[in-house]
Amino acid sequence: MQDDDIRTRISALVEDEHDLRQRLQAGEISTEEEHARLRHVEEQLDQCWDLLRQRRARVEAGQNPDEAAARPVDEVEKYLQ
Image (tube, one colour):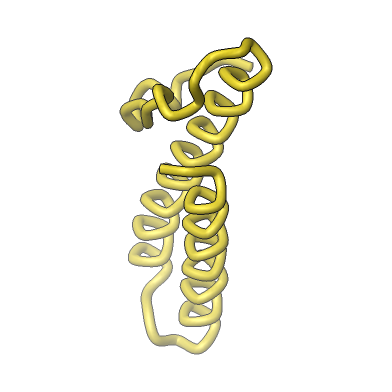
């Protein structure tokens, strides 16, 4: 996945996030459903940001950014900054 593809995916996920919040306010979904679905969207966002950071780090290190790979959600979510 190229940087532009990752940024496009991030934008789509942010739109999903906004849509879920609007649907909750409109009473179309329950708070529990919104929270569960938001958690999934946020995990995917974290994976995308992590992949983008990996690609940038590889470029800075003179390595091939295409060798970066998405890490599992569990690994990305437990990463200490």
